[in-house]
Image 1 (tube, rainbow, N blue to C red):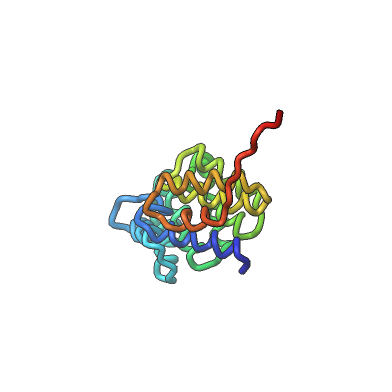
Image 2 (cartoon, rainbow, N blue to C red):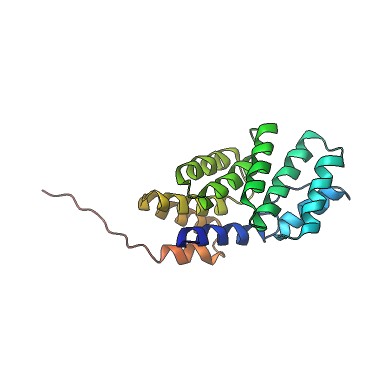
Length: 188
């Protein structure tokens, strides 16, 4: 894994392991709730994945909870490093609800991990526009994608935004240390 992949994967996993960061909430005592909890805790075990699949296949979920469960199963698959399965779930969530910001953001993370940086920028931006629970994670991921297309100025701005939104998160601070900012002065 190269440096950018390591950073984005670490960010995705760190973000997912924090309550509510990468999961969409489903409230009930069902396999869908088990799946949501697994995603919010950053779990990657087979039992969690099976709970998600059971909820999708047999849960009798309304459209909102079905979309949320696809996002949650995608998060569990991403934690398992099964990127094709994660992408398929995020794509299905987007197909069912094109306004599912979390699905766009998480699909953007997959794009970036696959070195499809322009797609990652577009998907993550769409997620931010639609609204996500943890915009700091989205800004961080998009910063990595901007670095992937050699747009250091945009990367710096997004790392800063991630740091402002979550001042207790050390990863954006660490990345900002690599940058040197100089001011251009006008001549004449």
